[in-house]
Image (cartoon, rainbow, N blue to C red; front, side, top):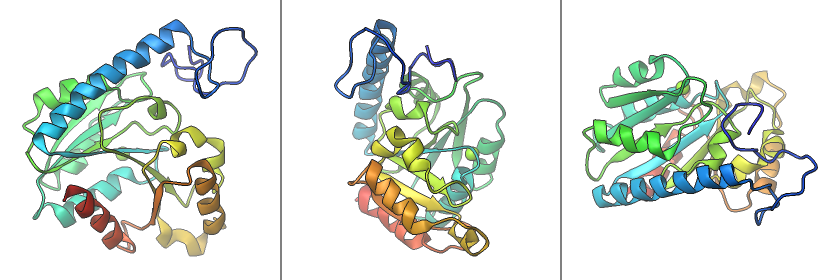
Length: 240
Ligand code: MG
């Protein structure tokens, strides 16, 4: 059991033990294997549902405060005229983010995980039953702010997007390599603040490349609009 968050997954903890190892060297205990196998089954079900609807599903993951909701709201404002969009919001408590998204005029469903540290595929399966999801559109899933646990839980998304704001440390990709390794796209956000910070952008890019040489990378600011065209272009390319 993960002592940090109680989610049942020992996220790359290092400690002496004598049980079986997975291919990546992590310890595999029956309860974890069972939990992840079940999650993968639900994720596969979600994925085939999304495929049938021709929905592009993006799973947005970051630390708390990296600007996921702000990026979403501004992306939705820009794209809602051309693409049907829906949002699933994950937070431990409150519906604040779903309310912010609804203000943009699109459908948003809030999942509160209570003490849970991540969304899982089963929760997403229930959420999509409750929503009137569009066909040939875009579904954003804003995960619980956490760079650890969401790495292990496939939700059935097409792409995992990791957002790292420049107000955080540039060494986050070294500290939390698992989530960066699973990212299809890494977004460095809030770059309008760079002149006020000691954040080393080049170093951060290098660290992210070290964790994942294949991930695409974008730098943007939802506030200033810088880099937003490339992000919208990335979305349009994957919708096509
Ligand atoms: Mg948020």
